[in-house]
Image (cartoon, rainbow, N blue to C red):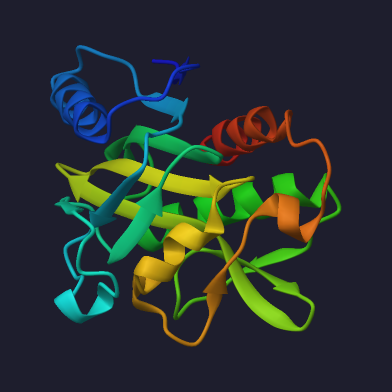
Length: 206
């Protein structure tokens, strides 16, 4: 089956989105639906993955929505693009690390087209840039695998409100900060989503 590409223009509630992914996973497992890549934005929300700790919440007044993805606490909101997926690894190599590398490379390759040099880090999952001699995170990745089907996804900070990250220790990393693409290089990123999707599909076929 071909991979379905779904693009939402309106913001999508986080809990409803994850529920949709989990239902799609069951359908894919039963060979009743196609794999999925879904591009969207969320209303403001802080989510905590399976390994987050309470001391990573700086502002105790914020609400953390617990989720079953891997990773720690992160923020989602307008100006940040979310790429969700439901991908059957049993149809490919059952290699989670390879799948993560595939995602990282798809993002890095796309950003090169915008003259942004980015890189991955084996110790700190995600995509990073060196901006004014400081290492900053611009993409977070969170994955869960069930029945060898990978779901959840990754986020790209385009022009989101970076002050929101001051209320948490993003992804549990204390010695590095978060940035967005507009801060790194002020240009039009309208075609970035399509470039990342194209790279993902191409790399999934290898």
